[in-house]
Image 1 (spheres, rainbow, N blue to C red):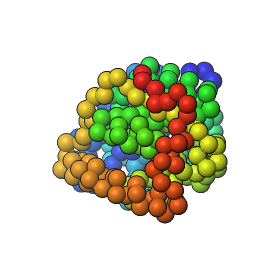
Image 2: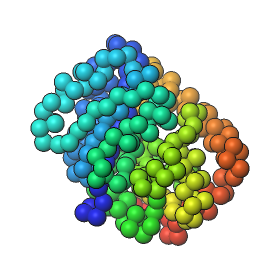
Image 3: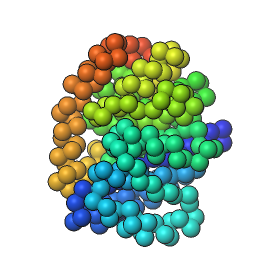
Image 4: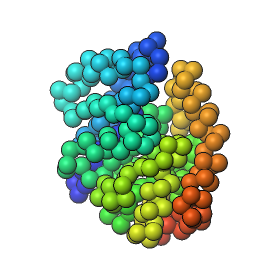
Length: 248
């Protein structure tokens, strides 16, 4: 893992004050799992201000105090849509030496393993501009090239040249994927884990509702995006690098 500097971006927020403690405890557990994987030079936790009750950041900082003594963990708040403006602002706040950023949902943290990240590193050495990891429930999208920020690793120089994420309908990955393929050709690497743990959905009412809504509308919203961009799903799939998807 010496040739690249990887950052990990986690989004954490609580709409309701009564959920803050549960949300923070879950975040601490996920951060510890990411630390144990020993693959990231920096972990950045994004609190999307427009979606949070206002108490998550302070409680998280308090519980992170011990972890911060031995690992680079930063917490940042940003306004704007949690999958667009806020996400872009957070990405720009990584240390300048970070050139690859993994965006991983809390529900997919168990997919962060040394084996996976070694395969990620190999893909970037082969010329990938983005690497997607196929997870349970979402594999049909990812295996066809439609990388999901449930677990996606973006090469920052190429990603930032495209201007970041641009849509607020929950399929923010489509626009940069199309832009990368248009500019670099076959540059999407897909990793397909042999074992796919069930996604660990937040047990709060908000977490369950959001997950169900996202799953129900994802294909429809992806279609809206490719139509807007003047391409189709095959265009993205044709951007998958030779030798991928790759079983790991």
